[in-house]
Amino acid sequence: DAKTTQPPSMDCAEGRAANLPCNHSTISGNEYVYWYRQIHSQGPQYIIHGLKNNETNEMASLIITEDRKSSTLILPHATLRDTAVYYCIVRVYRSSNTGKLIFGQGTTLQVKP
Amino acid sequence: SQTIHQWPATLVQPVGSPLSLECTVEGTSNPNLYWYRQAAGRGLQLLFYSVGIGQISSEVPQNLSASRPQDRQFILSSKKLLLSDSGFYLCASSGATNEKLFFGSGTQLSVL
Image (cartoon, rainbow over all chains, first blue to last red):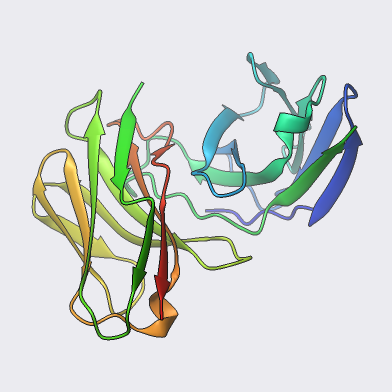
């Protein structure tokens, strides 16, 4: 699976949009972009995933560039409860590799009042 | 959606003692199951995964072992704990499509 690069930390003001970038320049055509987050001392939580079209759900939006070499996770109105480590992961969907997810260091998002 | 039950939440064990962490899954059948470990301030490391009863794959050489005696039960064990086994242990489950991973609440293990 392709490797991802994320900034180690970011700050965001409460109520503002949080835009978390991720670079995956070696992504291949059948690899999806997944986002998870981990609130301190809890298990990671799935947020969203996409292939090439932009995706939106109740938690966030995912914007993938046309060349698919980078993406941005958008939390439209960040709250203090969104403070967490956010992981961007690239992997083949429904692959024969049993669905293993390889987590990097992620981005620590600090939402401030 | 799936629910992952993991216990205990915290555990303090002396060096050289045995370990058994249990994970059970509700809301799905024939899941893929995973054990991850997170050292303090570090990312998640995949330790073991299982695609079925009795089928265990190890990702890294270590002092730990895993077993899957039932479809929705996954156990992490050690015969003799080391200081380096300290960390936050997470059990995870995915369905047949491997679309999403669902995680348990984790066990914080301190080996002293």
